[in-house]
Image (cartoon, rainbow, N blue to C red; front, top):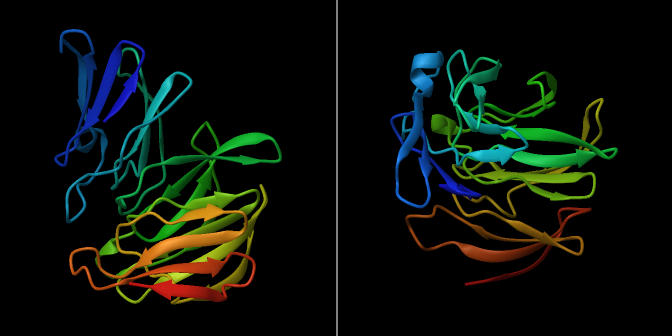
Length: 214
């Protein structure tokens, strides 16, 4: 759920993206991404809406992996890519002072422009297509992570593509978003529902584990 001025946006597991009036809960518009060519992932739609300029953007999956709607009237502005939806929100990133979008979907991390054109894609296939964490960003470096033994990977990115800096299992986060502070990644490593993982600090540049604690 997101608030913007006098409007509230919600995205339900069955694919309903709804705009409400904040003051009184009046329905402003409603669309279902499955009607736009989307496909519900195994655990239901859960990509938090991203509001940017005149758009509200979510993962739809299927023939509408990413969909941008007009935030005022709900009209489709563009649809981008085909594939399995993930569970992470579409996020903003600045590359060479230009705003781009990161989409951590079922089988990869994609960078797209504000018109929905895919610029590059990093393959990242997780069992059950569960890519659910929000990519962590510091300057031109991105860290992505998933559970099910996938671990994490750091990438140096540009508008033209990416370079893998390292990949290991120091942090393998199922749902819990990692954060980056001053060149170090902090995050929970383990399956969220089991409560038996570790909280770790990893050097962003090298992937070296600095410490781990329960």
